[in-house]
Length: 141
Image 1 (cartoon, one colour):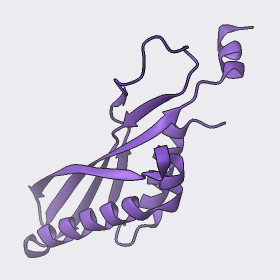
Image 2 (spheres, one colour; image 1 turned 180 degrees about the vertical axis):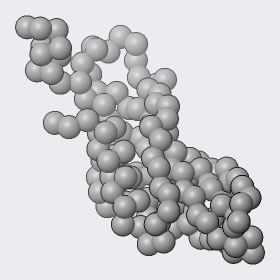
Image 3 (cartoon, rainbow, N blue to C red; image 1 turned 90 degrees about the vertical axis):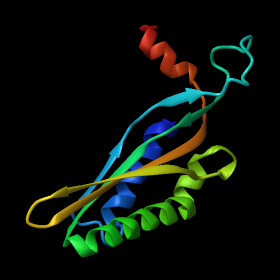
């Protein structure tokens, strides 16, 4: 079975490749991941764990100074809406929760036109299921 972590990242990249208006720059950054503190310490090492991954999507657009802020906000909304409603992402997450919007940080830079960028922080909870056959392969058995 493929790793849910990698499948979620791959789906985000696929979304960026077809998302309306994303022609200039769409990057998915594989940021942090944490396991749930509520999992008992005494559980077997191969027991499923609830994990939260927090990738960030960066989108940049180039427009006139008057248009750039509006376009950055439009792209932010598009990304949030598609992530929140994507059936494939929901299927990869715990209890079909899908992605959760955590916040955004924007920035502007000047040139002949304005370039606006926004980093959109998301989180996805999924169940990590270590598979013994894979462990045997890694351990050289």
